[in-house]
Image 1: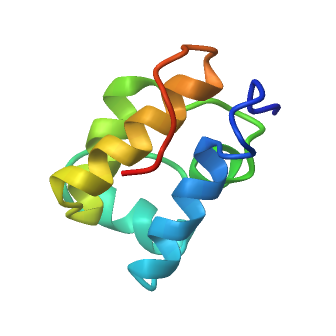
Image 2: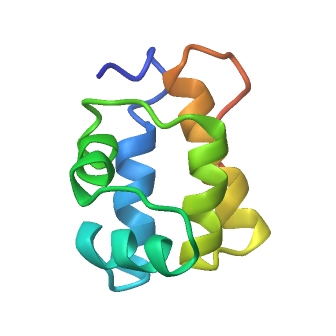
Amino acid sequence: MKNNGFRGVSFPLEFQKVLIGRQTDYARLSRAMSRRGNRLSKQFIGAIGLGTKRVPAEQLRKICSALELDETERQRLHRAAAMDYGFDIGGLDA
């Protein structure tokens, strides 16, 4: 998936940073989401992590909750996802 020319930053990269920072992986995130009643397969999580699928906003909200992200981290992921959809919303310097 291309990043629409926004300085090489895209959702997959930001998502990987969050997972590494939380010391988790696709399977653990999938299990955490299932415990919260939000079933999401590790294959789908892997696909968004690799950029082969885009993450819908509602699913991203659920992912952020399962990862217990703070507001800054949530905004960063939402901004990266929007940029991948082609929205011109500014950079990710925050």
